[in-house]
Length: 125
Image (cartoon, rainbow, N blue to C red; front, top):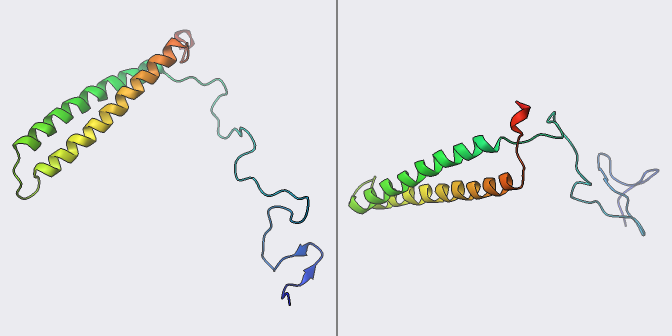
Protein backbone atom coordinates (compact mmCIF):
# COMPACT_ATOMS: atom_id res chain seq x y z
CA UNK A 1 0.00 0.00 0.00
CA UNK A 2 1.14 3.55 -0.76
CA UNK A 3 2.35 5.35 2.35
CA UNK A 4 1.77 8.83 0.89
CA UNK A 5 -1.16 10.91 1.98
CA UNK A 6 -3.46 12.32 -0.64
CA UNK A 7 -3.36 16.09 -0.36
CA UNK A 8 -5.23 18.78 -2.28
CA UNK A 9 -2.09 19.61 -4.29
CA UNK A 10 -1.42 16.02 -5.33
CA UNK A 11 0.63 13.18 -3.95
CA UNK A 12 3.66 14.71 -2.29
CA UNK A 13 5.44 14.40 0.97
CA UNK A 14 5.93 17.42 3.22
CA UNK A 15 8.83 19.45 1.85
CA UNK A 16 8.86 17.56 -1.47
CA UNK A 17 9.06 19.84 -4.49
CA UNK A 18 7.60 19.21 -7.92
CA UNK A 19 8.82 21.47 -10.68
CA UNK A 20 6.48 20.16 -13.36
CA UNK A 21 3.07 18.54 -13.61
CA UNK A 22 2.76 14.76 -13.78
CA UNK A 23 0.21 12.59 -15.47
CA UNK A 24 -1.04 11.80 -18.93
CA UNK A 25 -0.67 14.63 -21.42
CA UNK A 26 1.69 16.57 -19.19
CA UNK A 27 5.09 17.77 -20.27
CA UNK A 28 8.39 16.98 -18.63
CA UNK A 29 10.77 19.71 -17.51
CA UNK A 30 13.19 21.17 -19.99
CA UNK A 31 16.73 21.28 -18.72
CA UNK A 32 17.92 24.03 -21.06
CA UNK A 33 17.06 27.69 -21.09
CA UNK A 34 13.99 28.76 -23.00
CA UNK A 35 15.74 31.51 -24.91
CA UNK A 36 18.24 34.26 -24.44
CA UNK A 37 17.99 35.65 -20.97
CA UNK A 38 19.95 38.84 -20.44
CA UNK A 39 21.69 39.19 -17.12
CA UNK A 40 23.95 41.92 -15.90
CA UNK A 41 24.41 45.40 -17.25
CA UNK A 42 26.34 44.79 -20.47
CA UNK A 43 24.87 46.79 -23.35
CA UNK A 44 23.06 44.94 -26.12
CA UNK A 45 25.40 46.41 -28.75
CA UNK A 46 28.67 45.70 -26.89
CA UNK A 47 31.68 45.23 -29.13
CA UNK A 48 35.05 43.75 -28.31
CA UNK A 49 38.28 45.61 -28.89
CA UNK A 50 39.76 43.26 -31.48
CA UNK A 51 42.90 45.34 -31.91
CA UNK A 52 43.81 44.96 -28.23
CA UNK A 53 42.98 41.28 -28.31
CA UNK A 54 45.16 40.85 -31.41
CA UNK A 55 48.06 42.64 -29.68
CA UNK A 56 47.79 40.44 -26.59
CA UNK A 57 47.60 37.28 -28.71
CA UNK A 58 50.69 38.29 -30.67
CA UNK A 59 52.67 39.07 -27.51
CA UNK A 60 51.74 35.80 -25.83
CA UNK A 61 52.27 33.77 -29.00
CA UNK A 62 55.85 35.02 -29.09
CA UNK A 63 56.27 34.45 -25.37
CA UNK A 64 55.05 30.85 -25.57
CA UNK A 65 57.07 30.04 -28.69
CA UNK A 66 60.23 31.26 -26.93
CA UNK A 67 59.22 29.25 -23.85
CA UNK A 68 58.65 26.14 -25.93
CA UNK A 69 62.11 26.40 -27.51
CA UNK A 70 63.82 27.18 -24.20
CA UNK A 71 62.20 24.29 -22.35
CA UNK A 72 62.86 21.90 -25.25
CA UNK A 73 66.56 22.83 -25.15
CA UNK A 74 66.62 22.38 -21.38
CA UNK A 75 64.86 19.01 -21.74
CA UNK A 76 67.50 17.95 -24.25
CA UNK A 77 70.41 18.89 -22.01
CA UNK A 78 68.97 17.84 -18.62
CA UNK A 79 69.80 14.55 -17.01
CA UNK A 80 67.47 11.95 -15.56
CA UNK A 81 68.32 12.69 -11.90
CA UNK A 82 66.31 14.59 -9.35
CA UNK A 83 63.84 17.29 -10.35
CA UNK A 84 64.00 19.36 -12.44
CA UNK A 85 64.83 16.60 -14.84
CA UNK A 86 64.22 15.89 -18.52
CA UNK A 87 60.55 14.98 -18.01
CA UNK A 88 59.81 18.19 -16.09
CA UNK A 89 61.23 20.38 -18.85
CA UNK A 90 59.42 18.33 -21.50
CA UNK A 91 56.09 18.88 -19.74
CA UNK A 92 56.76 22.62 -19.56
CA UNK A 93 57.65 22.64 -23.26
CA UNK A 94 54.39 20.85 -24.11
CA UNK A 95 52.39 23.29 -22.00
CA UNK A 96 54.01 26.26 -23.74
CA UNK A 97 53.35 24.61 -27.10
CA UNK A 98 49.67 24.12 -26.23
CA UNK A 99 49.30 27.75 -25.14
CA UNK A 100 51.08 28.91 -28.30
CA UNK A 101 48.55 26.90 -30.32
CA UNK A 102 45.67 28.55 -28.48
CA UNK A 103 47.15 32.00 -29.13
CA UNK A 104 47.61 31.17 -32.83
CA UNK A 105 44.02 29.92 -33.05
CA UNK A 106 42.83 33.12 -31.39
CA UNK A 107 44.74 35.16 -33.97
CA UNK A 108 42.95 33.30 -36.76
CA UNK A 109 39.57 33.95 -35.14
CA UNK A 110 40.43 37.63 -34.73
CA UNK A 111 41.49 37.90 -38.38
CA UNK A 112 38.18 36.36 -39.51
CA UNK A 113 36.13 38.65 -37.28
CA UNK A 114 38.00 41.76 -38.37
CA UNK A 115 37.47 40.82 -42.02
CA UNK A 116 33.74 40.43 -41.29
CA UNK A 117 33.61 43.95 -39.85
CA UNK A 118 33.04 42.95 -36.24
CA UNK A 119 34.69 44.70 -33.38
CA UNK A 120 34.53 48.16 -32.04
CA UNK A 121 34.38 51.14 -34.39
CA UNK A 122 37.29 53.48 -34.00
CA UNK A 123 34.89 56.46 -34.03
CA UNK A 124 33.19 55.33 -30.79
CA UNK A 125 36.12 56.36 -28.60
